[in-house]
Image (cartoon, rainbow, N blue to C red):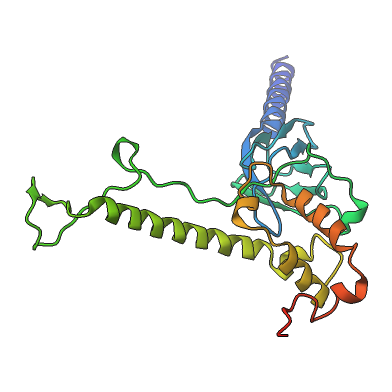
Amino acid sequence: METKIFYTLKLLLLIALFVLTGKSGYAQAKFGGRIFENHTRIPLGGIVVENLTSHEKTLSDANGIFVIGAKVSDLLLFSSPAYQNDTLYIANLNYLYVFLNLRSRSLDEVKVTQSEIKIGKLTLPPTTGPLNSHTVLYQTDAAMQNNVGGVKIMLNDSKGYQKKKLKNQQIAIDEAEKDRIAKIFSAENIQQYVPIKGQELQNFIILYIPDLKTYNSSKFNLILYLSSSYKEFCKIPVEKRQSADFLKISSK
C-alpha cells in the first residue's frame, strides 16, 4: 500500500513538473528592434511585424522601432506592400536591426500613392542656446576690456558677428545636407530603384537630383519622386538620354 502511494505521489510530481516546464517553455519576453530600408538606411514606419509562432502582430513606429512578445526559436515575419517580406529566426533576444528591400526596381510597373510610407528627411536638428536663442557668443580674448563675472563678452559689432556666424553655420548645415542627398542619389543606390545603368543612370541622377528646397519639403517622398522623375526621363529619346554629351554645356 505504501509503495502504491509512493508511486502515485511520484507520478503527480512528474506531471506537475511537466506542466510547469511546458509553461516556462512558452513564456515570452518583450523583444524589440528597428527596421531600415536596406540601401538608404532610412527608418521605416508602418511595417507589419508578426510572430508566426504566437500570431501576435505589431507595427513599427515612425522611427522604425518595434516591440513584440517573442522567445528564442520563434519566427518573425516583416511585411509591407512596398517592401519585400523577410522572415527571421530568433536565435537570441538581443536588440535587432532589420533591413528591407523594395519589392521592384521597375518603377513604371509600380503604382505608388500618397498613402505609401514617407521616407524621412535627413535634416540636421537646429542648435539653440539658453532661452531658445540660436547662438550664444563668448569671447575669451584677454585683450577684451569688458569683463562680466570672469567671462569676457564681445560687444563691439556683436550683431554683425552673430549674423556672420549664423550665416556660416547655415552654410555648413546646407553643405552637410547636400552631401547626404548626394549619397542617397549615388549610382549604387539609385540603380536599386530604376532599371537603368551606366551613362543613362548618370544622366538621370544629374538631371533629377533634388535641390535643398525640394528635398526638405514636407511633401517630399523618395519613391514618388523617383517614380515621377523616371516617367519624365523615359519621354526623352533613348539615344539622347544614353548619350555622354546629353547634359554637357556647349562651348559654342
